[in-house]
Length: 329
Image (cartoon, rainbow, N blue to C red):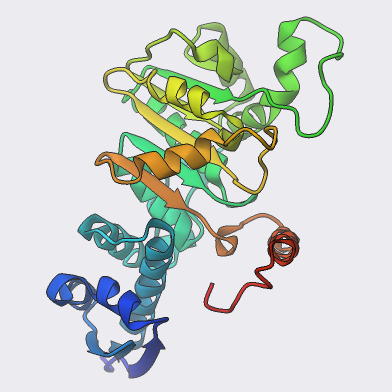
């Protein structure tokens, strides 16, 4: 059997300070990468030299870049971050090597399709509260609902509750005809769409009629305690800080809470701070809570979506006086 060709790669980090955190206490994180992937890792100042079989070096480079993303967003790295990243990259191509999140009623499997999505799914498996922040098209809501359906199908929870803040995105919907359910349906439609794609429509209807699945506005969560349930808040950026606290404290025994949101699409009044931003700041150091930041590279919709997101991000940065994004970002 022919030997696998060895390759050499150099990675230059942004600064010596980034390198110190990335390498870990006494180079602990570098040793973890070396031992898990079978590569030689040599650190020289703010440069990393990777040597070894091509596949292993590529995986090591992916792992390091993901850890840099985690560090930029969280401001620190923990051993569990390194373990999660290594578990994701060792799965190979996320589109084919990752363990399925669930299997749709149609037989199609739902899998993470990027490293970022792989980390998100890993967080869902290992934490009771997961907050996912990222731009449109990164699979925040879809993967959350897929994971919740898996918990329901495998009897790990008895109930699925899907929640959205009823905040208008620049349009006035208060004069829509119909009863309360008809009026709130436009807010909840994206949740129905994801649920109906993953599960058979008749099954969803049956579960909703028997109260196994609930889809409701955020305000309807007040005063409840939900045990043996998976509770998902979509569009969390449109909850106020008080609403976010109310939602997170609905968690009962044997429950999992997932919050998703996009901080570039806040529809609250300018004077009201987003509860999602507030929660990310307040809860980032609490054990048992994972905060996952998905990036433009995790967008899995039509490729034009990523270009649209970048175009709006660049324009927003120019208005704030930041200029365009650098290649390091």
